[in-house]
Amino acid sequence: MDPITAVYIIGTLGMLVGIPPALSLVGDEVGLDFDYVWAIPGIAALMYSLMIFDIGSVQFQGYHVPLPRYIDWALTTPLLVGYTAYVAGASRSMIAGTALADFMMIVFGMGAVAFASTAQWVFFGLSSLCHVTLLACLYGPVRNSAFGEPPSHRRLARLLLNYVGMLWLAYPLVWLFGPGLQWVDATGIAVIISYLDVTAKVPFVYFIYRARKNFVKVTDDASESASVQRDVATVPSAA
Image 1 (cartoon, rainbow, N blue to C red):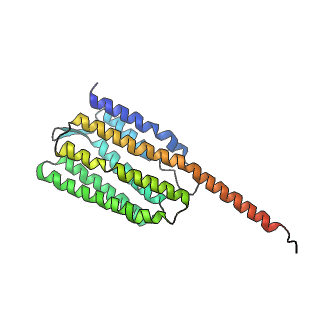
Image 2 (spheres, rainbow, N blue to C red):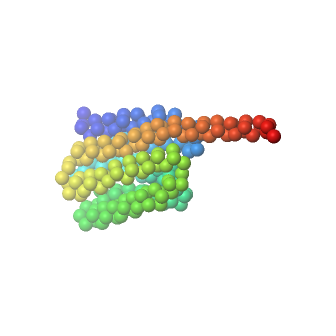
Image 3 (spheres, one colour):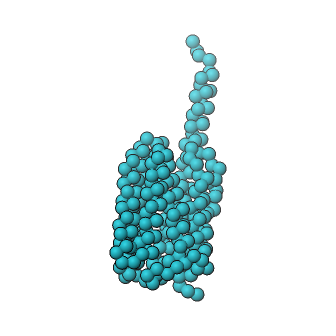
């Protein structure tokens, strides 16, 4: 078996691990909408399964580049950052802005792989600019908006924000040492990116799955408190 194919098989299995907990979140009514979280590992698993069979793969500058990978990123990474902004209580325009900055980062990143010579560095620069803009949005307005949210939302938003923000710093370095300087071969790039992809998506889903218990507890406590207050209000006054 080709080593890259083996890597994609492992990547597919890794993404599948994130689907059951994500599906269990569908329909939970705890103050946040979890119904679309499953799409993050679900789309990734589908795209990785296409890569196993070499569907949509092309050769750029001697590198095996699977186009499903970029379809995966273009669809799932805006969901990741958009959902992080949503949990933080950001406005709709800010959620859309972070998702757009992320999407353009992926588009320009694809150009950095597809073109050679000077053009690839121009696209890499544009992608990096979008990346910096994305980080500025996440650690600026998005982070600030979380301060006005309930403690359970604020904790989850901070966790997701730092996880996405720090982990994604590795991707530009992978491009730099791979297609950019060509110090790492195609197999090495496939291994590194697959590892980063699974690490970025599956724990993200797990963090939300684990935190939902806090949301349920908060909701239950609020209901119990409201019930107690109603009971107290109906007790006749001693006067």
